[in-house]
Image (cartoon, rainbow, N blue to C red):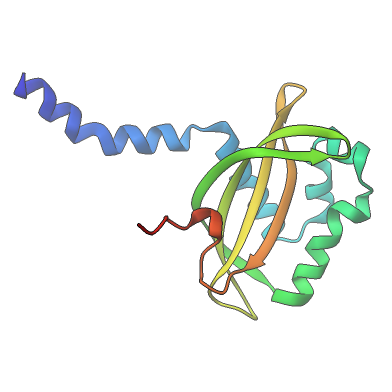
Length: 149
């Protein structure tokens, strides 16, 4: 029994890393955070979910990108931190999302800034369902804080 358990335990970190890297929603979010960091408005808009495009104008979907650039300055060095799942509305439609959180550096705030990318699956592929760029006083988003207790 021990001969079987030890090799499995030794490979668990590797298996976890492979599983995480093969998650298509995270892989898609990784590519979209690079689009956001590059401030590529056309690239971002082209990847928005059809439900989001039906519910909101191009300016509504891309406005936060320009406002965040004014507030935070240039964004760089996205580093994946965690993922959460949930739902959000697109007009009157409720869609399921996976949210990937990335710590980033900005010219105005080198710490405590996060980009989160909401990803949804629709029409046989992944799309952006939303994004946010936020600074947190405690250094980490409330969704990622561990409960005290």
